[in-house]
Length: 294
Image (tube, rainbow, N blue to C red; front, side, top):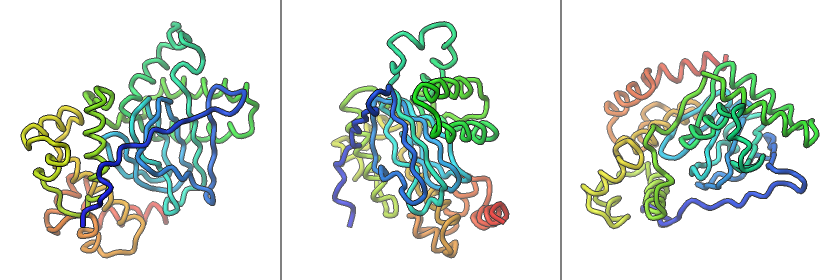
């Protein structure tokens, strides 16, 4: 039976900085993982460093699998799920929330802040950093734990500047992604995202998803493509393939079982889709991960 909680919208998360601070700094260790795994959004910009481990990231219409930790910058009001859980096997997770004007209304408009202002604008689509940037900035984020409030603030500004100058990044949602368009659009797309999140292991037809948001199939297809810059079928397949990547990395399941546990009902189609998505077939992907871990 399809999940009944299909009308659930992303939760609006109220974020309050600690007394005497203009931002919120939180650090979670392996035994106290961040419990905010639900689909949520907030006006604050969110910088997240996951030290080690692997897991799923869902930010806007983008879904992907990360390994060896993650460094993510999530823009204002961009819906996303939490990045860690008890299966991620990360050492720690550090999260920094800051309002766009946390240093004053016009601070980022001064000439010296031009690159950071551009970074924050790009972050509306979600940004994942990799390579030396992920390692270097990750270390600086971890050190924040031992700094005073004032020096931590200076360090955050320095971190944003280094991220703004890095070329080791990927924008997760293609240009044209428009989660902030209208309230009605947000409600519709969030209903769709939540439904896929809960039911991707089952068949999802265009008729049922269009009916869910009170649209005709042609209107829904145009609407979804306009909002997310991808077809609904592609979005669902990507969600299934990311889940398959996670199972291949974390569970001692046969590849056939992974195929069907991820919502695919044709093994040949699964193999072909997985290779197109990752550049490797499932067995090659799993063996490469084993070699990396070894």
